[in-house]
Amino acid sequence: MLLNFYIFFSIAVVSVISLIGVFTVSLSLEKLKKALIFLVSFSAGTLLGDTFIHILPEISENGSSSLLYSFTILFGIISFFIIEKFIAWRHCHVPTSANHPHPLAIMNLVGDGLHNFIDGAAIAGSFLISIPLGFATALAVIFHEIPQEIGDFGILLHSGLTRLKALFLNFLSSLFAFLGAATAILLSEKITDLNNLILAFTAGGFLYISSSDLIPELHKETSPSRSLFQLVFIILGIMVMTLLLFIE
Image (cartoon, rainbow, N blue to C red):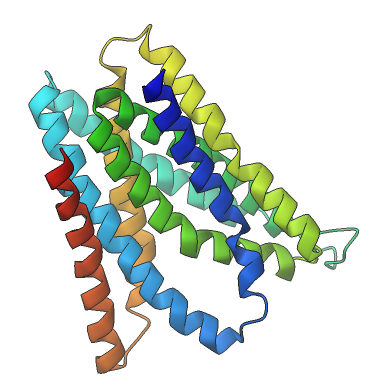
């Protein structure tokens, strides 16, 4: 009972973060970009830290087939690649308006909902193996969701939606995390070793997001001083994940 509380409370926090975009509307684009680049750096550090400090050691300790988990990690990487290609593939030539939001917004919501479903399953699978691992994965997801949800909110506004509608739809897509968690919990009772497979898939997803999405975004910054701060925030993210080892 307490374990389920931890799982769904963590996911509730993740879902509430979907509302953060509304607090950035008053910021200028330049200020928002400056803030986001460091949030992205910190997010990359937490995802890498959780993968290499928590998830992979847990898999190697509890897993019985290293080859199976290696393929599952690769499957996670390829799955996130497919999701991103699917989102970027669709387009529409009808002008954007309040009554006809651009399909970019629709596809963003579909992709975000699927992403949140996977996040929910990842958090649940982590908690089902150990509570400390669950908190580590939940924190990594939360820190990643902050810059992501700000970006998603901006996409929805740019696509012609009102602030209220963008906020509601973004929050609605975040609720798929609850469905992902419930699915993981139910299936874990029927499928042997499912939790470790979820962890391996999560590791692949985290590696893809950090190395294919976040770090390339950081390379767009060419200022030596700001690049140094990016490195500092990446290391800070890794350090946060390292400090969580003391609660295990």
